[in-house]
Image (cartoon, rainbow, N blue to C red; front, top):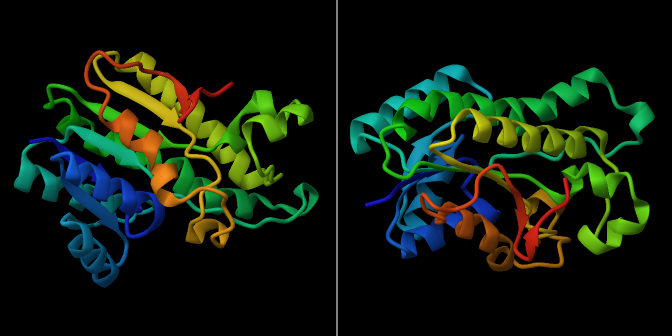
Length: 235
């Protein structure tokens, strides 16, 4: 049985990913900051609710201890928890604005990955999927003509976009440091979720496709990559 943890999974892409992976036979721990919301979401798809706040070291350690006690190992980690942050012009963004977004999107992924590494090392096929965004592509950001080609709705958000660029680099460096693991960043595309006021052009079913695919790649799959459902994303 494949044991999987998905952070920020009470709704949207995280919940749909949980639903799909459970259908494929995974035992899924659904990370949630709120016990009631987490329990309701977990019950709706047949997952296990795991109280987990990626911005809190103690919460992450307690979650890892719980998974160790119940499952003994972790096979797949999906770092899905994310926030958008303020959508103000770049010149109005403060360091505090940046820190608040990075604490979830970047430092949260590092907290969870580092804490769960001992459990991932016990897996025969450890896999980490970091849910990034096309808005984190430096190549696309530097070429306005490419915005429509790769990112259907371009948003210039200093905190969010740069946090996803940082997550991409983190994915690459973890992949180099841990060659026995499959560690990749993915861009689900502009998906209709609560994160964007349900303005995305894709359904959550469509957006979750690349997350599910990379969660199931196995030991011979790619590592250190950045992927969309259509193929590699330019860095």
